[in-house]
Image (cartoon, rainbow, N blue to C red; front, side, top):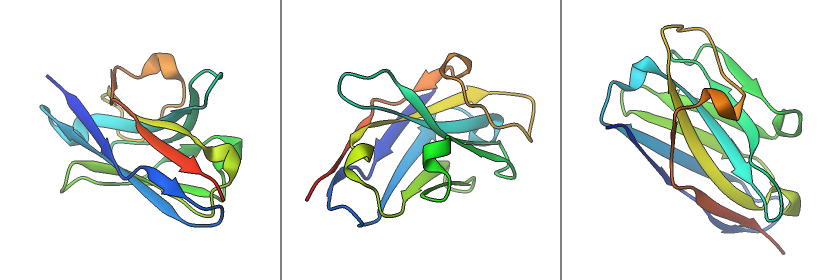
Length: 127
């Protein structure tokens, strides 16, 4: 059974950088495209970033472009989300997601396409 475990959340001040990580266990990591979503209080879950199986293709939500970076380390079965200078509006629970796919150059961006989800990690940005 595939399991996703996020880590790295916490409280930061506006302008600080923060890195989240997510480890996949229970299956071959390189068979999965990965993604990050987030959910703020009172809002639905929204796409942040996605990355293909080999890490060659990435997709970002408009709000994340230039501020967030998704990457993966296939040797360690991990995907990362780096946040550069997050603001108060980035406060949310961040979720890691995975989809098993035969396509090695496709990054996914819709919630319905992802099959497996982590439990989420809270990121709070406040001064």
